Image (cartoon, rainbow, N blue to C red; front, side, top):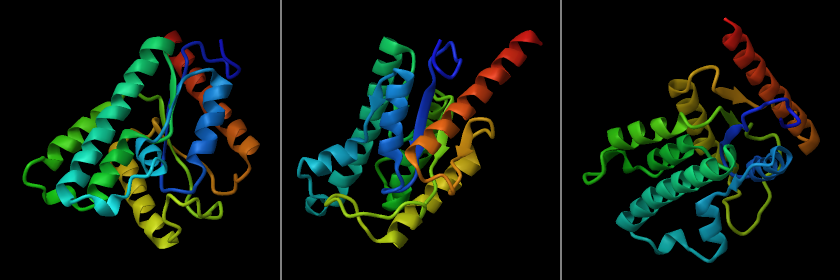
Length: 205
């Protein structure tokens, strides 16, 4: 049993724009819950020197598809080995990137198929947590854009997808007032405890 009182290890994904604290919180929660952490494939590639501006449209599209499949493979490996996982991004983010970069009219890959695939992948998670935009200062790290309105554009899209497609019990929004890591961890543990309480109540019925 973990510190949260959950017998089955949690399966959590974080969602939202760059610079809102997903990686820091995801890594801390993975360590706290003793489950594998799945990083963001795009960030890893950018840090390794990938320049998206050198890609043509087809290459960019194929990269998004590759990243989505890579994330799913990492998820399956984590669940197979440990039974739980914390992911830096959710399948909804992959869908948001697809729409954000304008591949909705792509002739070779059906957006309907992308939506169906990513929503199916969301079912692997107990919680998909959307972190708030604007709560933390957007710092330059040489990888992500520091244009806050560009980040807000993506964030609004990710939030809208979550509200449109996720069951209410699976989707939660981290309060904007919580900016400290320890406060965010405490809040996450409370949410996980509530999930376990609901499971126990359902099992008694």
